[in-house]
Length: 419
Image (tube, rainbow, N blue to C red; front, side, top):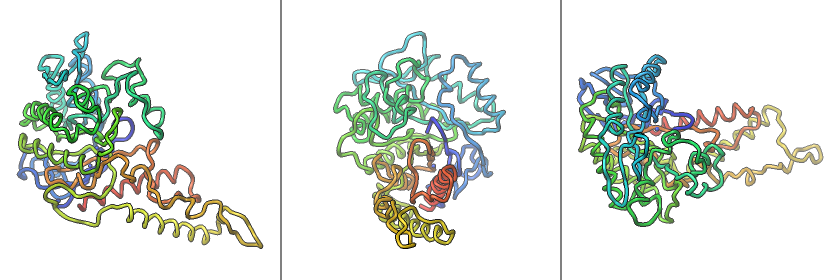
């Protein structure tokens, strides 16, 4: 959600989206109509009783800038570019206090936590909130990150990741300073490494000691800004999933990540009733039971449904080719084209793209259906993930194929607003 495209989708559900388009699901009417805090009703955001439309951007590094003037200049430039919401990290975890008065918010070491409330700590985040309000900006605060490699220590990621991801997530780059990359601010794996127990990433979602530790930090941050109207919303986590640079256990399931979201969302909602809670999942449409009450039960996304749609699209594609006089690739025998080099079986109609196969252990449709979560966001990284629901149309240029896949991905998440 940080290196390429931030689709801030207000996929708000009627009674019932990371960041950019519309919004991924409004679960409930969050605050009174005339409230100065951002709220969600139906499929829209509201402020002071009026519909609030916005354009958002990412600046995870705001609090790590060197001076108050740097922060102020940056926010002024963001506002001058007609953005109205900026997303930034509300965490900066370390296991040893950094040198040279570098920024850090929380020290996690040997099973203990301590908060830095000084001028190189949360006072810098205070200043971000204050200056954003001065410039008429709202701030979406993310509370932790799925990714936090240790340079030169963590093992490279499994196959399928491009060089940019490997550099950012595998810990192989030891030349960039801390807080330069979005994954160098601590996060889930910092908790896992420093509280003992199995060194498995998904312990963060199920180990009660780790859950309590994260809730403690969340309480510190959320209570600090409960009455700040310039806080747009709380994002529970950036890109939470079963896998990370630490290995995951063999037992991590979508229900683990969903239940954790429900627990944290309820905790934030009890602590701060003024602000909307959001999810920052990738997301990946799956089908698993949601914890607790569900507002509605639409037809869920499932492998069977996706494969059925894919096969129907494959047939339509072949018909279009025939009508257009485009000969399928194959061998011409006795004047007829037969034995295509890409048969239905070979086009892999029975497998799903990486965004749909459940390999990340995330069910975004279920998470967005948690009553305490007001909206969700989603990513679009066409250079890193396969979002194709249907076989590629060979009659289209590569660019148009990528464009069509991206538009279908956006439409899919718009449909999730009906949850």
